[in-house]
Length: 76
Image 1: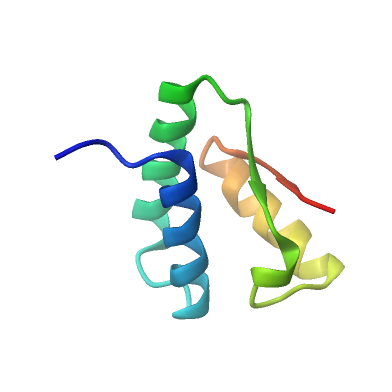
Image 2: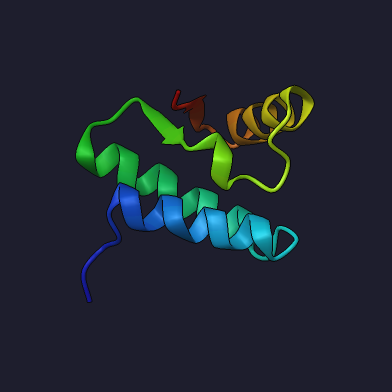
């Protein structure tokens, strides 16, 4: 079984966010490992796919991910 890519890990986070944050910490750890493997510094998320696409929701997501060692930015 191969390791998930950043795109696959990001998609699993979108699914988790829509499912009321089910297993979010495990998905963040998977994303962190994928970012490290691929040499990427930041995870990029599409704000239109977020459950809470407002400023406070995005800032809360950034803070939560940062506490777990993942830098997040949002695409335009």
